[in-house]
Image 1 (cartoon, rainbow, N blue to C red):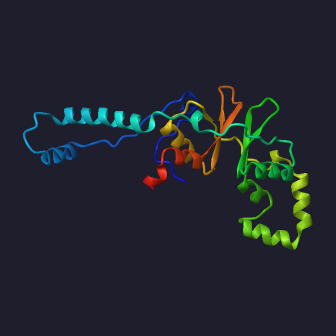
Image 2 (cartoon, helix red, strand yellow):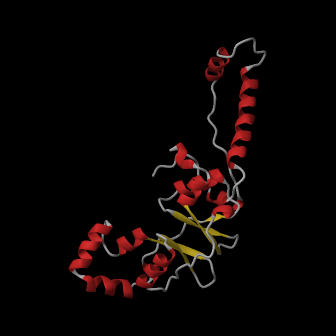
Image 3 (cartoon, one colour):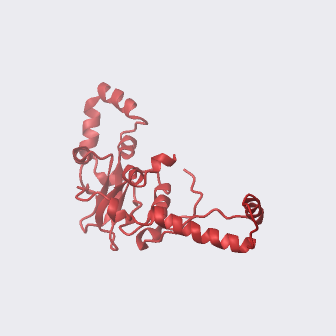
Length: 210
């Protein structure tokens, strides 16, 4: 996935939230002014400054009130690096998750375990292919999942995000990877919750803009 907006991982934990803005040319402004009836005693630079201020105010009004900490799911049961894949799979299924944070002994997030990681480890491109191979040889898959630890299959390092992160920095984080969720961590990298892409979209009614 291409990323057209500069992405600063540090902003995710500092709560940075730069607001991308369409830059207006003098031609854009002059064309707009021609459509306003009456005489306008205003320069293009004055018009541009008003636009910048109005844009920032509107973005703050629409998107500034919610932070990741308001949207994250808490009480998530993580998986651990030395856990067997079949046990990890049961942990994800029990919570209705398609991915889960991998947390070390010190509580810090060291990776993410996703459905794609399972497929990759089991050498299948799709779940349909996995199903067909499982029907043909269930024993080998059971052995492979039981003997393989999470650390051998997980995606690391994980893209994590801070509780105070705002709208645009969160978009940048999701655009930085293809995962459906991100671990939410404190300043020490310890797990605080899990932000699901669908929860983020639902909170801002972004589906109406797609």
